[in-house]
Length: 66
Image 1 (cartoon, rainbow, N blue to C red):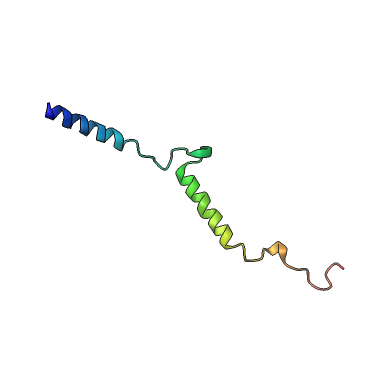
Image 2: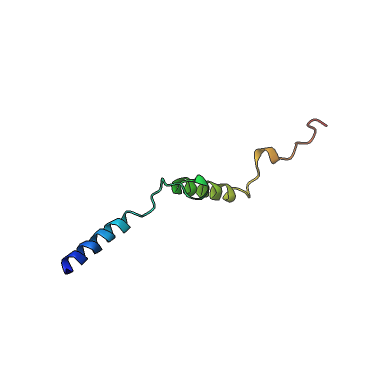
């Protein structure tokens, strides 16, 4: 009887271990975990560069197209 219980516990532990989430499973919005991490990293990089002026934002030089 005790041996059957230990077998059942072992089987349940193995089944529960197989339920972990992998990086390629789609999450909310159909985005995988690894894609969401990459998007977060890209957003963080862009936010850190927000203080630097873009090339298009440069003020026009004097005498140019007046």
